[in-house]
Image 1 (tube, rainbow over the protein chains, first blue to last red):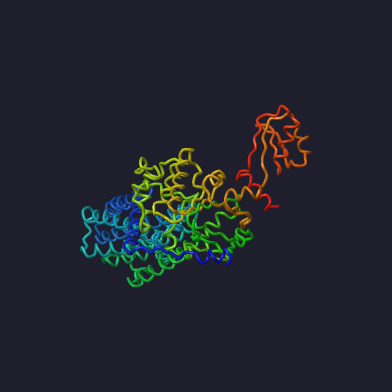
Image 2: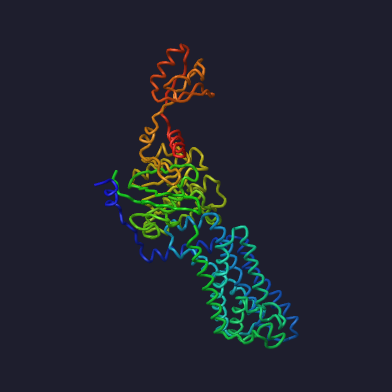
Length: 278
Length: 297
């Protein structure tokens, strides 16, 4: 018998199983660590928690209120559009910048070598994003109720919170798509390249002329905003300013279909690439 | 020592474009041993380790980790890993980093035990980003051991450590090995391999060119080194048939020879004022250099 045969016969086959309660705990710890880390990163937490509420109160409540000449229809519209804006940032920047940096600095490689549950890297960042989106929604709702006097039902508040918190996953997919491709240095630039046109083309803050309104269909944020408007029974800025246009024909089902499709395509493409990296 | 094979590469090849990183490599890590993988830059050490960790698939051949594919999480629950270049999240404290990684394992050490073993108690609540380079390496080591792994992969573990921290890590490693933990060490510090390793393999051009115990490796290169203060000229000594090389440096005359006894006899005969005579066996560094040079030729 050769030495090689002896060694092969002695080869262990000893994988270690872990109770599912412990696996869930690992997922929980990853999500907790990611959220703590995001909260302790001032360049992340301050703009994405602070900007939506400040801009909503200044521009969405006071400025829009003074310019609307008493047209109360603008009140719920502003709440929805600033909510859409508020949930865009954490996912896009959280995934785009953190993934690019962790990939480049070897952390992702270390985590892949360690027995980290396979999906927990992405799920933890998704949980962190949804937590931030929820905090944004809570601050915006507080402002809407006490300062903006937005008169919608509690059910509608809950519905739009659910839509926007779940909708933040779309921006996670966009951010991840960038994060697995861009270097740590170029990621912020690429995220902004996606973030700014997506925000402005979604028709969130000002009406787009009817001739260029079809451009709104290329912005995924547009569909989330439309869905939010449907949920609270509000009209888009385009419709309030210029009357019914191409965007007025979007039904909630069409919006959900587009949002789910774009999220899945970008998310699957990115996670496939993520699995190959290391 | 038993010879259970914990990790194994069987005839693996890996190319990156036109560059052959591994060329039909066979490697076995046995239970209870500290195995050092040596080689110059681009010899294939990192690629070999990354195949064993499941970070990339081989083009040909198979990698086993505890008898399973390294991609299986059940296999990786047996291992701890310390990589040379892995920046941990700077905002998390040392304790939080340990708690997170420990949660990946079924029966980890408590954070307090891990902190104590790695002498990090005083830094437990400090953010990782505010630690010095050496302290960061200690934290990475703590993460590698916190899950009570059966097999530890350590890539250049003592780079950036001061002498005291290095000694502490060495003694911790020796203790782990005595408790039955196996260790795969890649290092540029040859004295580290010499001080710790049970078995050494030298990689060059993606192949193992030599493997065995430190003593067996030294024996592969039979030369010995003579050091002395002598008035004899280097040119004169180089003409002696037993001498393979000779030069003079700040420590005096340095002679490398196969039959060292004959050279010493002749030195004493020809130079009555000879002083500071010392004879060394080739160290691992010298062996390693010569082996890799031979394989390149």
